[in-house]
Length: 109
Length: 120
Image (tube, rainbow over all chains, first blue to last red; front, side, top):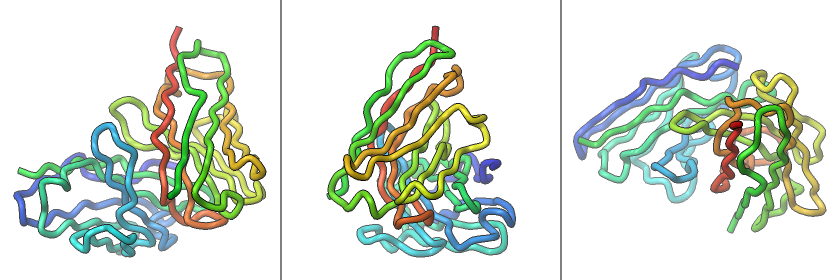
């Protein structure tokens, strides 16, 4: 149950795109199509942004998209907006448990 | 509207016990798996434990070393976490969370959390 690896931080200017990677193993990310992504603003509870690798819940802007290749999943935010500045965590099903990523701080320059 | 309200957190001495509760409303509680997730101050999210709709499948993070017990009471729409032999490293905000279905898939709803501080 080692945490999935994410970059500590990424940044971009408004309107640009940023991509966050999430690297695991064949026992979690690579083994299941159950990767989800969460956005967390300071002092708030996390919010589901992507589920099942690339599915968006109702109400989440289509600027957010997800993908997976092998043991690495990715979250892309296109057309970056000021309100996207937050911490982002990936999460994967791992057989009989969940494992979260280390978290990435997205900064809008 | 789904609501998950945690309670039971507080300041506790190392080695002591604490029981967290989560009151669920706005959905058919007995139809969904539930989980506890924690976040140490300034740190990332850590999955703690999960329980399926009928308590038939229960799992824990390896790091807990058998000190925590998750349970649920579907008649009371409530989830619990019994925490024993608490350590300083258990200090965290504990979130009650709902899964997307009766078994594990992904977490789709979060409570606001209850803070547990382990200190002498």
